[in-house]
Length: 150
Image (cartoon, rainbow, N blue to C red):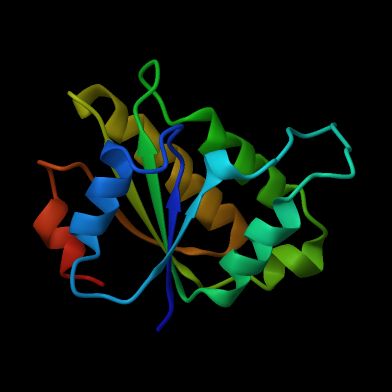
């Protein structure tokens, strides 16, 4: 199974990256740091948009690990934009992602107030798009249990 770790932090080698490395220890995986790509918001149409590069990586993966830091008590804007862009693709492209397993990693000094709403948002996103939401974890909560599902 191919694994893609989507690092939705502004810092491609920061705590979210390190959390992903720890979570995926012993597994072969690819990592994409969203901050290193130009992925514009809905309604913006620029020729240098790189969303299709990210989509191709999502399409190639069997398991998608979404890693986000906590910014203002929620997921990062990088992850939110990615989810919005995926959800607004043509139906046949959305259907091509169906059945992929999705995991959520929430990194922060105290992500306890964020894990619930973030889990609800990502699990709903997965349900609407036909993805298989496996679960969510923080560095200190549900980490080992979720890691065992890989």
